[in-house]
Amino acid sequence: MNLVGLEHPVLDHFASLHTELNIFMWGDSTMKRQFYLLRGLTGGLSTETAPSFQIAVSMPDEKLGANAAVCPDVSVSIHKATFGNATISLTLAVCETGATSIAEVPALLEVLQQKPYELTLPAGSLLYIGGAGVHHLHYDDKTDAELREIGALPRGWLTMKPLLEAFEENTKFGLAKLQEQYPKAKLGYFNTHTIAEETFFIPSGARARAVACASRDSEVCFSGVNVSPEERDSFRDTLLSRHGTDVMAKRERAVLKDPSLKWTVVDGHKISRDAGSTQSPDGVHYFEPTMMQEIEAALTVLRRDRRP
Image (cartoon, rainbow, N blue to C red; front, side, top):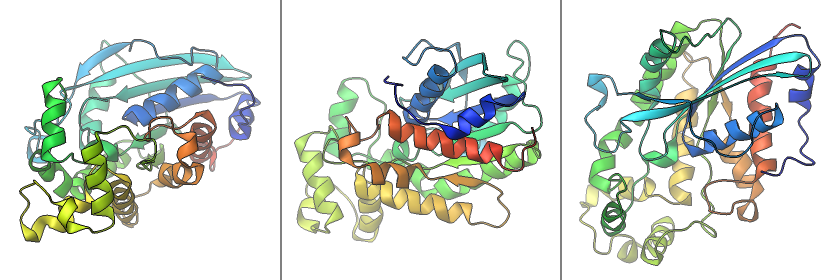
């Protein structure tokens, strides 16, 4: 990663304080790359390394835990360092191969706080939780079959539909449980990155379908797929595409408007959309300046109402 020239006034503010920062990060590769960047800025490696350990994780029984697309385990990475006058403790739990749900996080954190892990989350810690919306979006049947041939987890329409239909319920369940378990924590929700289709690497047929679905060209959008007429809007709105990420981010914002939830949105969707495709080498991940904006927004949640 290129850390030269990055501005991070909120991180610098914390470095000027004699304080302790504790941050737990959950999500997919978009969260993992933020972890590496923050680790690099605070004295550790900014490049990818093997996780500290892996741990089994599962959905609660009533939350579609048997779905084949759900990750069976997550990779956990830990970084502790002194940064200026502050000490910082980062814990990342991430899965990149399949779908993850916030409904899994409360039970995972309970395990991580027990032996042999003994994670500590003192009052004032930041829970920085990503919805991993991209990993809920589906491929069309043909693309899904091609990817499964090379060992990828299933991500077809029929496989993903139960998780997509329950997304709001599962997200609210997890967020409500976390704020109940950690009433003194700072709460930041990281929403779905915008897919930049100009640089997004998918088979040409899948790209053509994504463009057609977004423009409501039904003939191309639904060519060769078995989708009932009443489910066509749902298929279109949850296809892995820029339109799909736009819809997912809209759904996430609607969940966070629930007055019972106390989470602040770290708007990765808007930040990545404003950055544009030239800042995304693969259409999903973005270069360091964009990630720095996201990290600074998350640290602003941590800074809010915090006393030196």
